[in-house]
Image (cartoon, rainbow, N blue to C red; front, side, top):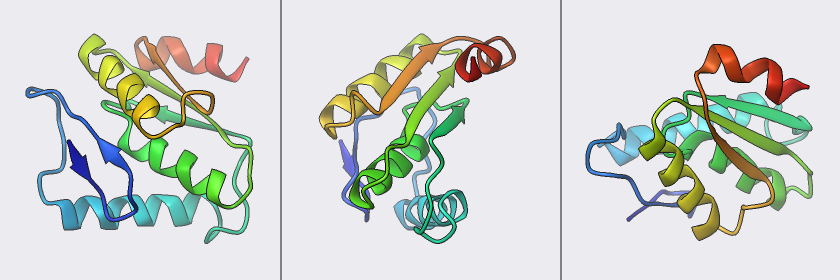
Length: 116
């Protein structure tokens, strides 16, 4: 289990991709969070976390949205069943089960369904 600078706790399977330089991962998460939310001022109602792996990016945005009082729903799309299991486990570990949903599907097949 790894804890990011934002306090997000992540459990990553041994063969799953994860940015091993946590300082770089924290900077990436901070940058995405800022871009998605206009600097933390306005979160979207829906965010697609395409090729989500263990869910780090989408879970970080969902966590920030909750802290800002926003109701952003995040849908993670991942072709790896192991990655989806990690994302679901990470959502539960961070208390974000109702705000983050991980789906095992190819991105090109899952985007339309997630938007519908």
